[in-house]
Length: 544
Ligand code: FAD
Image (cartoon, rainbow, N blue to C red):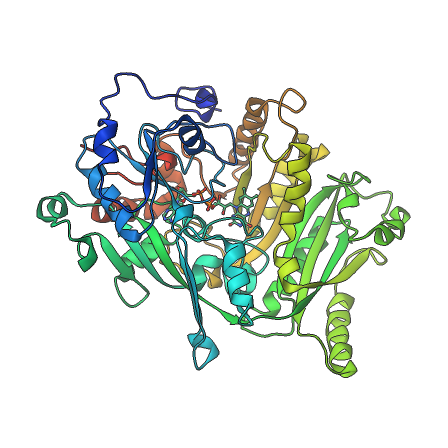
């Protein structure tokens, strides 16, 4: 395998890399004179903020951090950068990237969290209701605003402290993706500031209020090329200043269930059975389906200790129900069914009947099923409770070399054998190891996001969580483990697409994009020919 210590490796940039003294950067005063309503900062704390992300192992110091107040501020910054020979711009959402994707070495970081605003519009029919959110809004705030009106977007990431704009650059996957597609499948319209063509620079009249130049509104029926390019486009084609997203009537509560499996084949079989129940829009199945792999021991973090919802669940968890011949891993199928508070006993009875009927056909270990009811908000915001615990322990701030893969269904069992059974994942990773399926039919093939071609593919994610070094392992050790895992898969001819890729060079892009690489380059030529945007994705280098 290529050494992860090569010069283009993330490992070569694990400490903050300050700008060189004689960097050829424009003088600070020219940026301070930029006519924007928001602010420009060169303060050391803001530069350190611009060089940070959740991954916490790549830190590229920007030249400045800007906080736009309006979409015009974003457009003005793009023009400013275009007029310089080398400046790049990284829109930074909530900085939950893993490997510097929202950073810009010696460039400008736009802290999009300053671009806020949410409007909920309830139409005469459910299909005409939507929420409009500025690019820097967090999903938690979008959810709160929508629930006040009894509505919510149908598809969610697992974690709600991500920005709308940042999430749409990947896909926004979660337990509802099998039914409603990822978040990007639920976008109706975008307002985008694209990069600038040289022609646009020379003819630009600086009258941003007329909406000319690089401001564009796009949807599946207007400027559709840009619309689909933006969805999963890794920030390469524009900066989202506003997104319009479908909303539907929200349930009040969910019945939340976890079931333990000893055999991966049954676990996979049942997940696919359940997602296929709703492949044609039926409503008899669950509304949320995820699965994860766990160690066959009572460890509260890596083992079956994660399954019970309450202490009394934990007391009734009977490990003797797990066959002594089962392997080193167990599997947890996590599902949820929506409901609105039953006014009549028979409504509850009928929901129980549906759930019992579904569970009867599943192959989980009888006796190892746990359930609880939760409010819709509490359920969707469930990861936040974990965040609070990890923050208190100092683990949220540690390096996070996460690895997320999309794997074709035909190879997921092979992947399980080679990746889980024969590597040191056998002891767990201190965080979730997801393995759950998606239906490709729920993903729009015109969007930029790259997935496997098969009708069903799995999200397999290794979400490592540790104490920061020296208490925990150094990031470099975990990064090497990740590289070795990927090399093992390649050597066994197991195909996969990395979700939220971390390219080290342009050469990495060809296998990832495959036949769509040429189109991706052509879109870049159209919407950001100077290669100003999202340099942290390491796909294109800035042109003069
Ligand atoms: P950032 O990390 O700040 O930015 C991501 C990319 O988008 C960068 O290239 C950046 O330049 C660009 N960008 C940011 N804002 C804009 C904008 N307005 N316009 C254009 N480009 C922009 N992903 C899922 O799919 N499902 C999950 O359930 C999920 N859970 C997560 C939980 C945690 C704890 C973490 C750390 C990550 C999780 N992710 C998940 C991954 C997350 O979706 C991506 O990291 C996402 O990009 C983060 O959003 P962000 O707002 O922090 O964006």
